[in-house]
Length: 286
Image 1 (cartoon, rainbow, N blue to C red):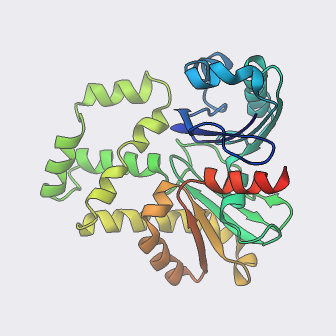
Image 2: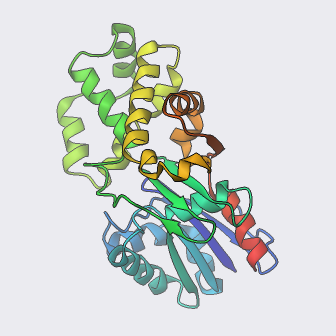
């Protein structure tokens, strides 16, 4: 059994296939497994909480894991250790989530492209057809992650408290979420995964896109992301498209295309859930 995993900070999708690429189980979903913010003990606890993974752990021969927080050596080693402790018979390969986005969005294996992730977090890299090049080292959600779910969640909360929201939007926002200050601070400063907590607010934007406030908020975040991340690749953008993966990107396609027109880069493909593209990629490689 081969496990292919696409993990963000909020959730992880696991698909099991055999050596011929046939899917063996229904897609398994666990909480996100970001080794940059979770301890090895917490990572193992999340995996072990899945009855399906627990049942089949000895049958797994290979794991191809793509995840947020897997861009540097130490978190990768931490995650590998957690996985190996559970899937004792498996060969384990861990890659950063950007590679999942690459495989899911490019049109052919050797296509060069700038590839962006806009999900719970955000990232942007250049794929030259063989290797990934990243010019900005991510410092995580509290400093970077423009146009991500946690970025928009933070902006929505700020606008709510600073009274920058139109009254009708503020009423709708306050009725959907617990906006009591102690509750928010508890989740931000005393609970695990504050980035995922913030990202939960972002869905609100896409349910209220009839408001110019919401559209402006989305465009502002995308412009920041484009200025700070996409435009790092000004030379490459003259000849290659910019592909996008992740739910925030998927639901912001109109705004992304408008910003692309403003800034002069070409938008390529959108993929909401990279896991499907990963299965196709690894099935061809088996």
